[in-house]
Length: 438
Image (cartoon, rainbow, N blue to C red; front, side, top):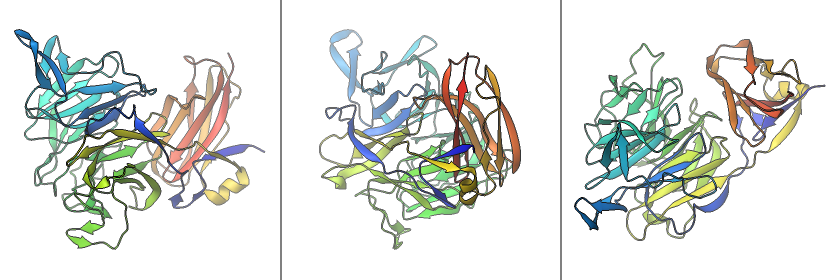
């Protein structure tokens, strides 16, 4: 009898139960204190971050004994060592240096569809794209007002909002060309937004309203509904990320300055802890992962302002910004990649209508076919991982119809060994193993 692997806990539809997050303490070390206001992770697993404040400095032109204060983008390898091109205080684009100097302030970061880093700066209001492999600038555009952490869909379209309320949410293509206003007048002050992989849902956390709103459209050719749905009440979020591996929206709840458990000034009756991130099912608004928090003895002055996952989704990096007091930094947490072996008969009870069949042929060299079944249409991913948890191939990343599907996998560029392939659709997550023999 073939065995299927169901990871991260048992699925009792519609709730997905995750292993407990384990706090691993400061990252990269206890001395790194910068007041996070932007955080991203690139495909190599490098962690990018910047302080809101100008904590860097470069020699002043004409006077090498003096320095001018600058923003500083720090880039760390997963082991905590600094990347070769870090820190970045001057972004060079087409040979022209651009110093991140006064009165600049960092506003947010996000990895784009290719893993390059989008960095939002205020004063002057600018959005940069930085090559994640070299640290060199790839392009920039001016913004109308202080921007926030943008969202990026799988086509590379950039969704940019602004801190000040009743401003628009704009869509740009991957080359910074304006497409349209997605939202004409967004509600509340905000520090971040997120967008679904297909680009048809915008999650807007107006932290002064105490809610996460969802603006949606049926397809890329339609206009976004200007009257949003309220996904969650009681969140005063200033930091958010969409977990593409598990199809969950992770959002901070609020802080001592903007407390959770209020919606438009009224108590919601919820009991969300401040400075904590929860995993939210974006289809229902249900909290399905109890999440993790920034652990400190003085949480009142700390405001979550950055979050990003490692490429395998098993490590999360998050940082806070101080309202007052001493500088603060980043922490990281991990969750075990626990696996539960489930027989085919048991799988039917857990996720009726969903199957992930053994690839054929297996072992294989270098191509094989993977067949899977979906009980209903929905956003679906099929990824292949090596035994270190790194994504080596994404075979499906789209909204798929119900029914049977077959995908061919070409491993010509991979070495012999055992690989894990994983199907995620809605709240269902199934994995299996295959063996490449060359």
